[in-house]
Length: 461
Image (cartoon, rainbow, N blue to C red; front, side, top):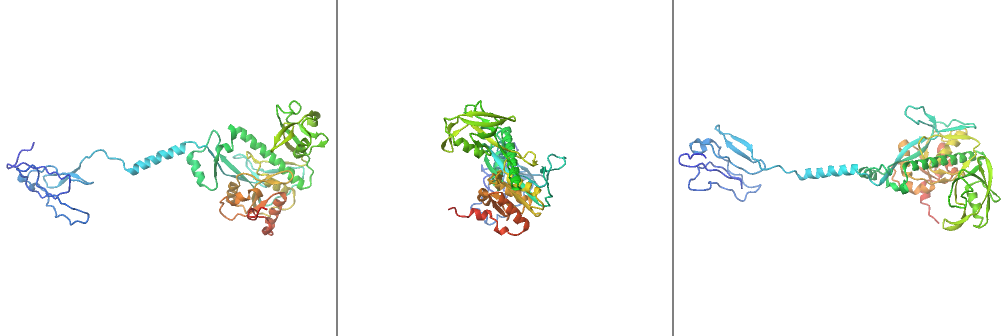
C-alpha cells in the first residue's frame, strides 16, 4: 500500500466507462471518487475536446508516479508514467480473442468442400472421348509403332489422301465401385460438354464393369461386321449372311435341340438369309405343329423338330422358339479394323465410308476434315447413337469442318449448346452419307444437302 504524500492519498483514476480529459487535479481526501469531468452528447462530428496537459510526475504532489490510468476503445492501453515523463504502454488483457464471423464461415466452407470432394455421388459423367481418323493410323500403346486403323486384304486398295474421316467416342467416368465425388459431379453439371447421369443407366441391375466391357466389345465387333458388309455390298460384292444362335432358353421349346453357335440354314421350306427372315418364318407357324429346323453345327448339317410356344412379343402373342440370334457374314474380302479398347456400335457409319474410300480410286474426302457418328446395318441404314453432344464438342476441338449426324439425333445435336458454326448434315442411310462427303469434297452442292436444321424444323404430318 502506497504511503500518503503531504497528507493526501494518491487517487486512482477510473475512466473505463467513457473517455476523459485527465487534467492532473490533486486527489481530494474528502471524496471517495476522483474529480473527473465526463463529456456528454459526443458524436463523430462533436467539437474536439480541449488538449490535455502533458502527464508528468510534476502533475502530482511530491512528484510521485500516478496509479495506472485505464482507457476504453479498441486501442486501449494502461499508461504508466515513468520518471522521464513518458507513457510506457502495455496492452490490457481483456480475455481470449474470439474468432471472427468470416473465419467461422471460411472454416465451414473448407469442411464442406472436403466432404463434397471425398463423398462419392450416385452418378456417372459422360464426357468427350478420344478422336480417331478412320483412314489414318492409331497408336495402341505408348512407345509402340502406329498401325493402320483399317487394313484390307484380298482386294485392290488406294491411297486416301490428306483428308480425315473421324470416329468420335465418349468417355464414361464412374461405375458401381468407383463413382465421381459430389464436387466432381457439380463441376460436370456446369460444363455444357458433359452430362451427369445416374450410374444405373450404364450399369443396370448390379451389372459389373467386366460385363459391360464385354458387351461393348461385342457391340463394336457387330458394328464392324455390319459396316464391312455394307461397304462391300455398295462396291458390288456378294456378302452372304449367316444367322447364328447366340442363346437358347433352358426352359424353352428349343432346349436340348438347338445350341448356341448353331448356324440356322432353313426353317420349314424357307432358306434363312437374315434374322428378319428367321423371325417371319417362325411367325408363320402356330404353337402346336412341329417345325423342321436345319442348322449347321461344327460344319455338319443337323435337322430337328421344334414345337414353338406362344409368348408376348411387342404387345402381341406370337410363336417363339426361345432363342436369341445374331448375324455373321461370309466376307469375300478381309477387312480388319483396329481401335484398341474402344467399344460400342456408334462408329458404323464412319467405318463404312472409310472402307469405301480405301476401295475406290481418288480421295473421297477431297482433303477435307469430316467427322460423324451413327450405327450402320448391312443394308445401309444409319441409326441413332448416344452422346451426340459430347461428340460434337470433340469434333469441334479436333478441327472438323463438317459433321454427319443420324436424322434421329438432329434435334439433340441442335439443342446441345455447342459453340461455333460446325455444319451438321443429316443422314438416314449410306447414300446420304456418301452424298454429303462427296459434296463437301467438291466444294459444291453443300447447300442442297439436308442439314439438321432443315430436318428438325420440318413439320410432322
